Length: 187
Image 1: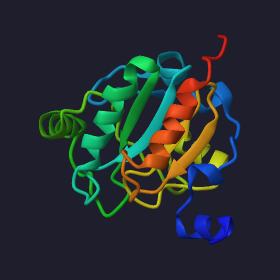
Image 2: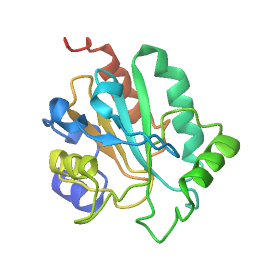
Image 3: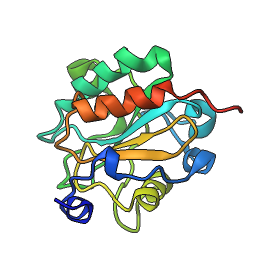
Image 4: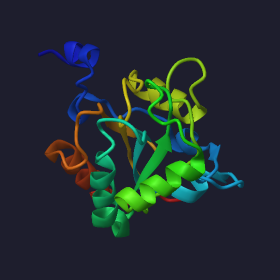
């Protein structure tokens, strides 16, 4: 299968994604932590880490991936890695709840401790700035809930995986480990 056909079919693998730009500009946006009133700048709060940015939903067939995402957070968090969750109701209304309800569900059902941010739009012209930048960097916008973008310590998008790729997938884990070996950028 050619890279072009993989892209068209949504099977884009990390190896097929060029390390595309963005630097601090990618993360130079503000979002409220879930159910909070005060926005934070992602670059100030998360810059310099290896990040897995995921659009989430509570009523989706992929919702059990929360468990695997939290496992990645626990496994690699001390090494400068973080999962960032962004609830979205873009796909068939699978995240209809309030931010408080989403937070309660994630915490009580899956023990989520990784950072979750405000409910956002991830596709189309109303997509939030972060997701517009992720799409510009990769040429791929989420096709469904639990699409994953891997961002290097220096703010480059270095891979993305469609929803059906589990958090523990060997290629995804290898990409995270590769990025964690890179030295932190000088700030």
